[in-house]
Length: 216
Ligand SMILES: [Fe+2]
Image (cartoon, rainbow, N blue to C red; front, top):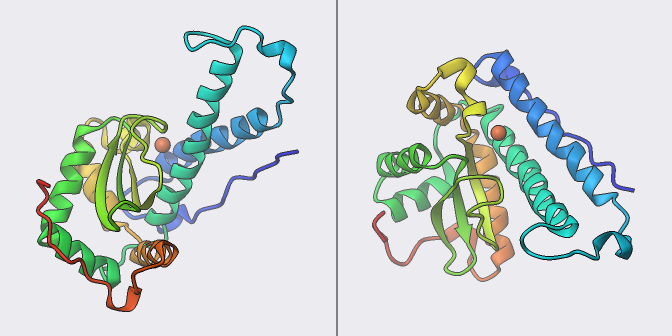
């Protein structure tokens, strides 16, 4: 029996966003947790899935709902975690790698901001297993554009529900506010953990071999 519980977050630590905005957003996250429990507790009965096909069927609905809810839970947990207890200065191994790979911190922020302005769901800084490098991924929905075996380090929700109460259509101002709230300890912990899991690179002297431009 699955009974996943929503995580708790210190929304009082977030500067520049209202409690109402964050509480309403949290309700959506709780909804994904509840739906995921519902989906995973569904008992597979072959007789209910005799119509399986890729246009419309019970199994198709179940599987689309599952990935949407599961990614919705994971992404919101990563997002809320990396924007609470923050307001910290960029620092650590991750900052060094960002500067190395994106030319400068300001260039990275510019790139991240433009990705976040160009998608409908998520802008995500990941460490990808294929090259052990940082990439900024744009996603239009929880389960659209996701890259497998790519580890999310910084997760930014740009669905309108994430900012519309406080910022209206001014998404750029929301993005700036989010960036000011980033918890760099959380980011560095994720970065170090993912690097360690990839095995071959020592985190204490990590350095990208080539500095790729943001156009690569
Ligand atoms: Fe959201």
